[in-house]
Image (cartoon, rainbow, N blue to C red):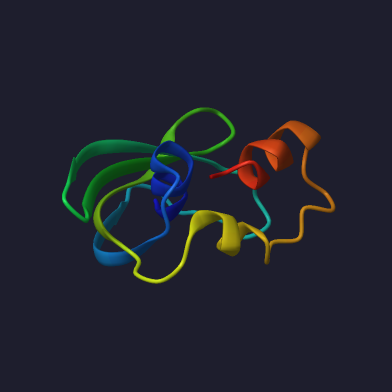
Length: 99
């Protein structure tokens, strides 16, 4: 869910509270798709929901979380530490062009 705040709000945040419900077994070395949604933003808090789908599109897990804006670090500084070697050029541009 942290990435949802990073992508949608271009902010660095820290987990304040997170609740996850696993609906079916999840296996290691198995591809899943994670989706997050920013529900609400108030002052320095972000409320989010998320789901993790398996390869057939069935929901394997779902969660809710509250994230707090991080102090003293910008999105640009955080992204400068990431290795984008094997990342699609369009994704790299999206993350490295942050204000």
